[in-house]
Length: 370
Ligand code: NAD
Image (cartoon, rainbow, N blue to C red; front, side):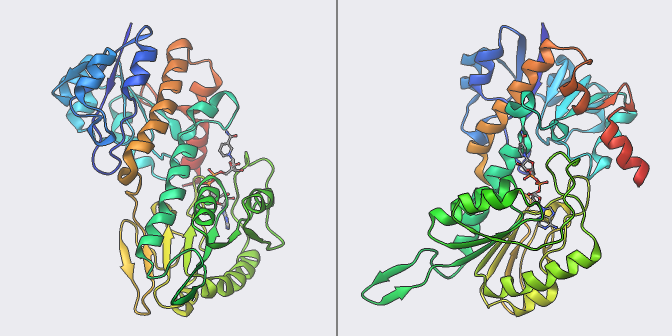
């Protein structure tokens, strides 16, 4: 039986990519070795894993030596440890940052990234991108609501009536739709924009208003994802979103294009014209940000008192729920991995490096375009 090793993550994600219930389900297919305290930030003790049938290992290097396959969300692995890694299954965003896997390539480690899963019916239960996006969309609204000095719902009382907050959502994919649903539940007036026409129905079905900006390039071959827009269209977007931004109390921006810099949707001029004390939570901060002043990993307050959150560690702040979803995704992938060989659509799409060579067609295309 294959030996599967689970690493303890750093504070960046705090994620446990398998939880005890997954081990119970998979223990007849593989042996499980868990780095001590790997599940603690997600609410699971070493004892919970032991009861489920796993073996706890104190040292990371020993665990890596034992395991045939290492599972991790984004754990940091030293060069020495990479030397003894055989196969690594993770969630590296290789299309945006190829440098993370170069050490693995040099040492001939086989690497899979669940970030590259095709969005097909079979892969749906493994879709970590959707799990992460949902959690982040939800949490982003709560972060903004906590920073904002105004209430979100309309409230009437002895002191008068507080108007509902205006929330603007940019990008209405998985994260954006979850943000819309969360803001609506809190009682906000929500407006949302996306370049994909298909998202209009989704936005409206959640009770928000869709900002329709005609003329976007909608590529039906892009697997349901958006593509980069031309300059003329983006100038039109800039003008319309300027007027949307100045009315907003909160902006949650989630717009992304796979393998590319995030589109710039909130200009510096718009930020300068926004109402003081408005809040932007930019979930695209890790790929360049949707606002002109976003700083990756930082929260800043501009001179006109706009808070811009560029936090890239939000997932680790909601680790218990995030781990539950991601662990089920990883377990589903692992089950598939254990039952199939590399002649399989899902394994082929996710395999990044085979015996020291980049074998992923999407990544090869990206590298050729560098
Ligand atoms: P994403 O994270 O890549 O992007 C987020 C959103 O940003 C997308 O809706 C995109 O259209 C939007 N965007 C990109 N450029 C923009 C711009 N210039 N202005 C405004 N918005 C812009 O995408 P995602 O949320 O992961 O999902 C995108 C698509 O994939 C959706 O159609 C979704 O329904 C689909 N999806 C399919 C599956 C499945 O089949 N299993 C699972 C999840 C998502």
